[in-house]
Image (cartoon, rainbow, N blue to C red; front, side, top):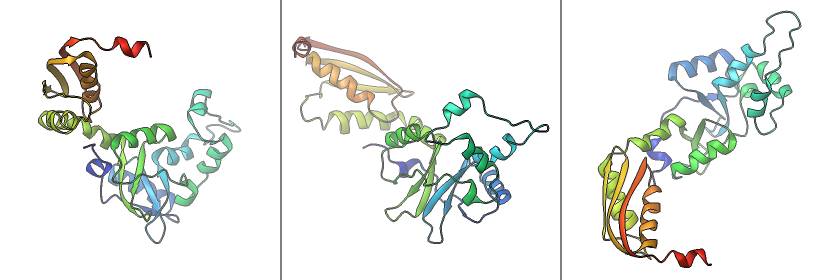
Length: 233
């Protein structure tokens, strides 16, 4: 029962075409209060993404005095990933249309993907927004870091139900029926008594893996410690 991208993404997001002028792209971002806008072709397939950072390069690389020759500091250069050389930044800073400003190909994601993979994909590629596309590549929405925070706003009752019924109730190799789950402000407390210590450890680990869990307080008791067999393997 993982939370899917479709459950948190923004729908009906604006998009621009490759020929859209710089100023219009800026106006779209401001009007929609977005940090990025997808660029689509005539068939509504995503071909790139323009971010607010892409637009700001035009101001960043303007000479503030004659022959300044501005160069970003080392830390900023190290943050820019995947072969984006300073020359590439300067070229983008001269862009006048969405096609000249965009990062292409776009890093996209499907609506049925679990949000945890959206977070990992953003981290892997150093982006803050992902266009959500269908199987044919057409735009269905956009998901940003702000949207992904919604997993932490899940009702406590929903989190408790998922842990008890979907996670523990469907465990194939562990009898976790003796575990009581309470959730307050996203913090899960586990109480009860199990036969094996390994089952208690498994219960805590499974609870931590549920979307929206802030922390797990483990008050589980156990009768026999079988974990010593793990250490000798």
